[in-house]
Image 1 (cartoon, rainbow, N blue to C red):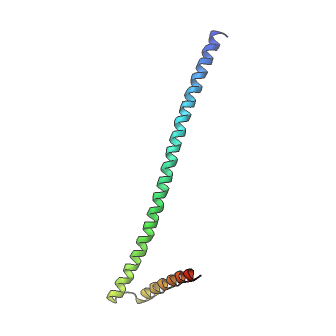
Image 2: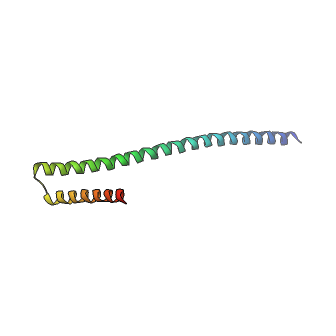
Image 3: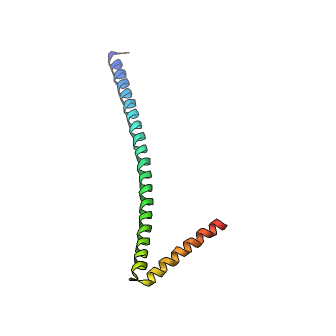
Length: 97
């Protein structure tokens, strides 16, 4: 082998070594990003559940306020009460079924 060939092979080895090093770093970064993605996905799920709970609580508070004061849209109050009764009936049916 000529000296030029030896230098080219050495340079090629260095480049391959550097590429493998960068590949390892990118693999680690990808793993870290995947873990962060899973964590954020779980956090979104928790926040969505909390939002649903808070909306339900808000609707129940509105209904309680309407019933307490006697003012407001009685039709809306009846609809909410009927909806709650239907949900209770579904739960009872599931427990019996």
